[in-house]
Image (tube, rainbow, N blue to C red):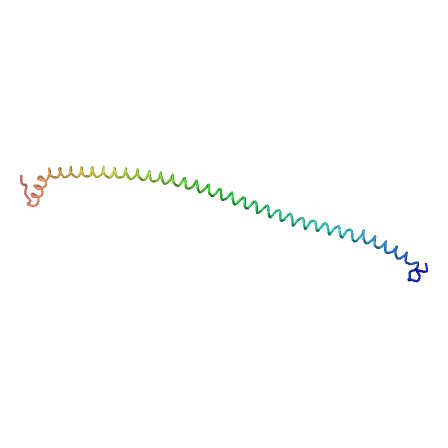
Length: 147
């Protein structure tokens, strides 16, 4: 005991140790443990959310790439169908226009022949009636009846 007294330690040491242990236990279970539990939980949620967000970003990029490839494939398919249909339409157009031109040319030729025939017919009729018409014109100009 003399050793403790020479060092300045007296009987209050045990009381101080008990007070320290009670304070330590109280602070540990009431203050530090809940604080560290909340801190760890928050860290897990934050880190977990960052990892989850990164995974969502990767998934979104993969879906975007997949959508881009699918859109490109659909566009190529659409262009193929469009080109094929356009070629068929142009072929049909050319056939119809060609048929219409041929038919129009035939009708024009036929009409020209009819007109030519009608003109010849009218000309021959006029030539038949020419003496009578000239006699009628002459009689009217002279004011007398020539017959």
